[in-house]
Length: 121
Image 1 (cartoon, rainbow, N blue to C red):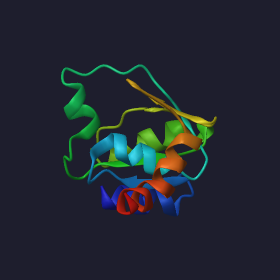
Image 2: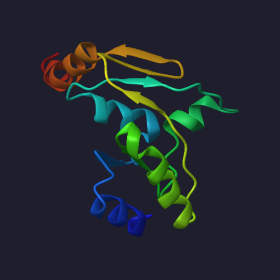
Image 3: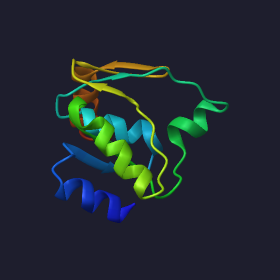
């Protein structure tokens, strides 16, 4: 995985990369979107939605790339024997993925005000 990330980054194929760790995929996607670029998720199916969204399985990364580079990113992942799945398309003012549909303004407000309000109350 690390070699793939180095090679893809070195080839200028990646716009972003974020590890999937604490909180799983749902938290990773929220962290990726909170600065203002939404995600319109692809069709989503899972046997266990909780495991798919919040599982903390190691050695996973969410990357973004230009549409024109997607085939090359997939090819490079295959060369490194890595599974790859398209999660959606970036843009807009919402995070829409599986059962998640939340405005970025709502996410940003919760992020910026949640802890101070929690500590004050």
